Length: 368
Ligand SMILES: *Cc1c(COP(=O)(O)O)cnc(C)c1O
Image (cartoon, rainbow, N blue to C red; front, side, top):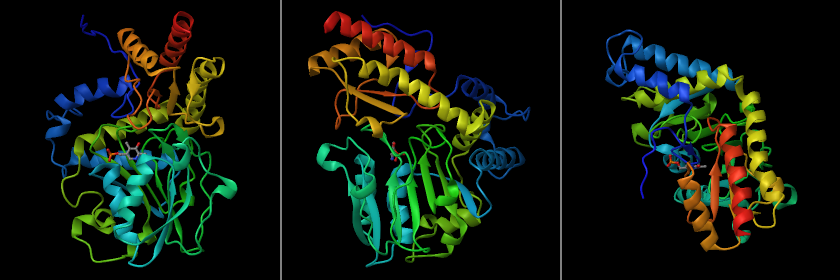
C-alpha cells in the first residue's frame, strides 16, 4: 500500500538534500512577496535594489562565517560542481604543465578526467584499489615537484570518507590548493587562506541545485592558461560581481538564508560539534554490532555521509524498504558503493540520527 506523508519525513538524501525548516518557511513567503516589495524573489530583476541586497548580504554572511579576507572573491555561478571539473584546468592549467590530483572517489575521478583534456595529471595519491574506503595521508601522498595546483575532494559523498586536514602539496609559493568541497562546505571551520580555490555545488549543504559557490584568490584571476570564451573565464564573473549575465537569483537568495541560519545556530564551530555528535550516534551503532559494517576505515569516516552494509543484499533491500515505511527516506547507497548511506548534512536533525540508530538496532534484533 502506498501512503502519503502529510508531515515531512527524515530525509537522508545525498543531494539535493534537506534544508533548514525555518529557511524553507521564510522562502515560502519570499516567493510570494519579498521584503514587502509586492514581488516575489524569483520575479525581481537581478539588477534591482531588492536583489542587490540579497546578493550583497549573501556574500557578506559567507565572508563572515568562514573569515574570508578581501584577497578572495566570493562568487555565485551556475553549472554545478561538475562544471568546475573543467573550469579549473581550463583557466589554470597550461598545455604541457602538471596538476596533482588525489583520487579518492567518483567525483575526484570526474575532475581528473577533465583535467587530462588540458594538461598533465599526476595522481599524488589514490584509494581506488580498495574501492575508495580511506583517505590517503602521510607516505601515501606523493606530490610531484612543480604542480600548478593540487586538487582534492574534501568529502567523498559516495564512499563516505572525509579529509581531516588539507593534503600534502608539491611545488613552491606559486602552486596552490584547489578543493571540491561540495558535500562538506561549512560543516566545520575552514582556513580559507590555505586555498587558491574552493568550489561547492549548493545542493548538499548550502541550498538548492543550480548554484555553485566559488571562493577564489583574486591574484589567481590574473593568470590565464589559455584564451577562453567569456563565460568560461573566472575573471569575467569576478569583475562583474557574479552578474555578468543573469545569475541563479533564487538559489543565491536561498543560500544567503542558509548562511544566516548557520550564523544564528552558532557558526561553523557549532556546526562541526553538532555534526560530529550526529555522526557518532550512527557510527557507534555500527561499531557495537557484528551485523552492521561501516565501509570506510574509521580514521577516514565522513561526518556527512555514513556508509554501511548488512550481511546480505537481500537484508539491505529489506532494511531500506522498512526504513522508508518508517519515515526514513533516501538511505539507499550509491550504485557504485552499494549498501546504505545516511547523509546527515548541517540541516539534518539529531533526532533523525537517533531514530535511525534505534531502527538499526531493532532490525538487527529481528533479522540478525
Ligand atoms: C554532488 C557532488 C558533485 C556533483 O555536483 P553537481 O552539482 O551535480 O555537478 C561533485 N563533487 C562532489 C564532492 C559532490 O558531492
